[in-house]
Image (tube, rainbow, N blue to C red):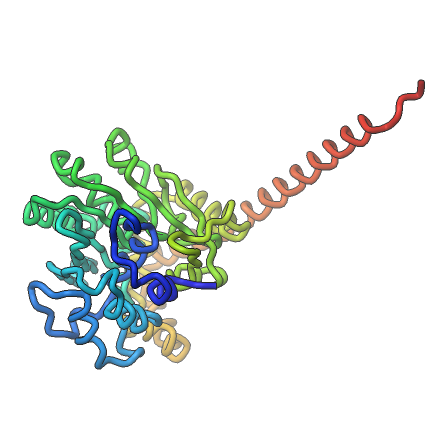
Length: 384
C-alpha cells in the first residue's frame, strides 16, 4: 500500500510537464502543504519548497501539527517535481472572539499556473468551533477570508490561472472562495479540489446553484467518511480507499495511491451511511437557533475548564470531568433542557437510521432471493 509520501519517493523525480501533467495526487499534496508550520520559521515573501524544507528540517515530528507532515516536507524538498516551485502569500489568522481559524498559502506550479491551498481545521478548539458553526450559519469567517484571499491572489498574479484546493474545512473554504468570488475570475480557475471537507447548507447551494464553477469542483472522501459527508453536496463525490477505520480515515496520509491516482472504491460503508443519515435527519428536525445554542454551550463548557486544543481534550478531559460537571450545573435550566432535547433527538435519529438500514438490507436480500427463484424456474426443464 502507498500514500502521498510514497508517491513523492517513487515519482517525485518527474517534473510537471505535458508528459507528466499535474494530477489529483499532486493536488492532495499541495492541499496538505498549507498545514505545515510556517509560523515557526522565518518565512520570506517568496521562498521555494526546497528552502522551506531546509528551514523546517530542524524540527522534530512532534513539532508539526499532524503526524506525517515532517516526512512530507522532507520528501518535497528533495523532489524534482516540487522543490523549485515558488511559495508566496502565506497568511494565518485565529481569533476566538469571532470564532475564526484561517490559513492559506500559494504555490506557483509554473509560469502559467498556481495552486491556492487552504488550511483545514487545526488542533485549536476555536478552529473546531468554527466547523460546527457551519451547522447553523450560511457562512463562517474563514469562508469570507477565503473569498478575499482568492480575489487578492488572482489580482496580484494576473498572468496565471489558479487551481484551488484544501483538506477538511480547507476543502469547504476552497469551494466557497471560488464560487463566491467575482464572476470575472471564474474563467481563470482551472479546478477546485475538496478532500473530505463538509458541504453547505441548502440556502447556500440554492444561492449559487447556477454558477459555472460547479463543473470544476471535485470532492474526494474515504469510504468511512464522516466530515466530508456533513451538510449537502451539489458536486459528485469520489470515494477513495483508506487503510484506517472510522473517523481516522479523515487523515489524508491513510488514503491509498496507485501510480498518479487515488485508489477508488465503489461506495461508502454502511457506517458512513448510518452516521450521515443520522446527522442529516437531526439537522432537518432541529432549528438553526437550537443548534447554535447547543454548540455554543458545549464549547463554552470546554473554555470554562481551559480546554483550548484537541491535545488538551485528549490528555485532560477525564481529569477535568469534575470541573465540567460543576460548570454544567451553572448552565441556565432552559438551556439544559435544550441540550438534553438535542442529544435525545440525535440518539433517536441514529436508531431510526439503524432500522432503515436493516430494512434496506432485508429488502435487498428479498429481491435477490426472488430474482434467484425466477432464474431457477426459467432453467427448469419443461414438463413436455
